Length: 57
Image (tube, rainbow, N blue to C red):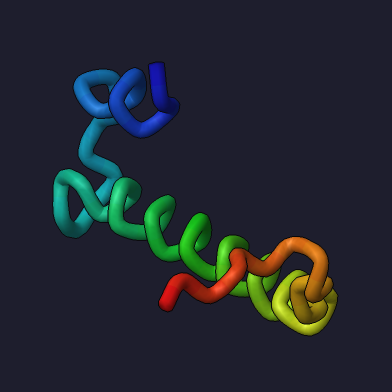
């Protein structure tokens, strides 16, 4: 079960919005995913021609 779903009813109000911790968690996870994507994107190369499908005409 995802951490955010498991912790949803267990976290208390620590000031501010009741579920601000969930927003913060989501933003940190999104930032990490973006960092991984920025690193992985330049590593992708073109597909070799032997893997292309033949043209049907």
